[in-house]
Amino acid sequence: MAEKFFDSFQIGGLKIKNRLVASAMFEYAADNGKITETFLNHYKKLSQGGWGLIITGMQAVSASGAIAPIMINAAYPAYVSDMKKVVEEVHSSGAKIFVQLQHAGTRTFPAEGYDKFSVDDATEEQLDTVIKNFGKAAMNCKAAGVDGVQIHAAHGFLINSFLSPSMNHRADKFGGSIENRARLLFEIYDSIRAGVGENFIVGVKFPFSDLIEQSITPEESLKVCAELERRGLDFIEISSGLVMDESKFSFTPRIGKKEAPFLESAKLAADNLKIPVLSVCGYRTPGFIEKVLSETKIAAVSFGRPTVREPDLPNRWRVDKSRAKCISCNKCKDSVADGVITCQVEKLLLRSKNL
Image 1: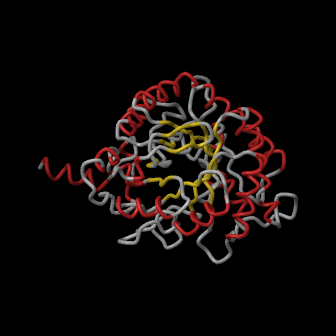
Image 2: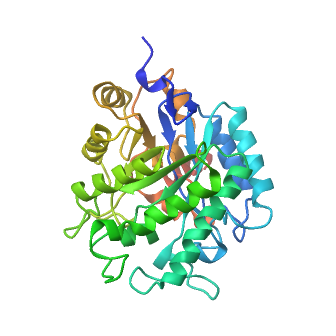
Image 3: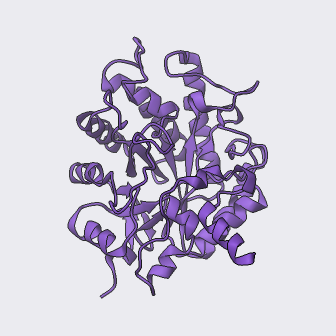
């Protein structure tokens, strides 16, 4: 009997060939915000690895909202024609591709010309510009032929900082109640939907917990997700955590033998929503994944770091069901010097073989 994770599933009107998703991993591969041959080759390799759906690393909705010049800017003049080449490579292997859209907030590049503002000091005029830029960037993605976009509302960037009560201390319409703290996300979604129309896939990467004491609650998270669904959202990917480091607060923890640390949150979302819910983080063994997909309402599982160590993991699992090789060391985040996200463990192993 074929494994359930190789079954197809639907997001909106889009059929995806299997339930193994290459989740967004920042590529470190842009050239002053522009798509490069290295970026193209990275997605060519991923698409040939057997993933049903590939979500790009976060792309800035404007040049001023980028985390660094090595982050793709979805608004530069040749973006549509350049991104079309990436889409063609991914589609040629039978995979689908979504672009993850982001404004980095306080994590924007610390240089002149960048919008480095926090949740509490952002003006309504600045936020209105950000909202409009999300809509324009999504329209560029649609023009490039991508299958959908994902709003990155997690991991401590701008939207997450509004959702989190530990970061949002505003006293205006963007602060206080969860309805107000989620207002920026709702208005960004509405801006995107107005630009791309009803039939284009729009999803959200959502932080079900900040993994700190003063956190968004499960009840608040469900309320936001339900409202997004009511507005027409097509899917949600459930994550957690404000930062990317090796602390216990990280959204990329060293999982050891424990798999899927955010599974319970994804199950809760799937039990309360009608749209597909993707569960991300810490999936490593086929048997466990099969159990999750068979016994819960979760539509698919997403992989971040394992895609860096083994870009061909789905193909490998068709013949070899051993655990994914990724050891969750988080060293792939130290890839700037490599020009593209790279497994540092695999790099060392290769170097030792060549000595």
